Length: 118
Image (cartoon, rainbow, N blue to C red; front, side, top):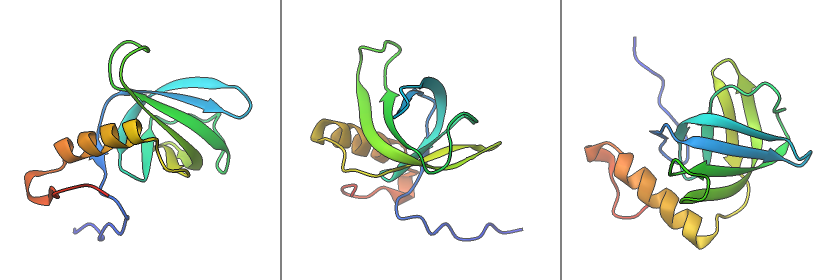
């Protein structure tokens, strides 16, 4: 059985970093990321996060909260047993964008790497 073509704007790559999620209601949650792209993030199912709600995201690239991180603003677009998906809704700051582009580029399969992401 063949998979339907993936029509996403950006390729997704699997990751396993911790993610900090902050909603406008001040709720803070930590989850394990499953995959990321230049357009969004999928992390472990988090039922408390409601579809349509805005949130802040920090992908923690080191074991310590004070280490490198990718920071973004997004909106919950899906939350089910397969995971919680966030679409980035604002441009990332230059440092976060550079980290995300580097991360995605380093994890793309050999035949799909581009000269520059974005």
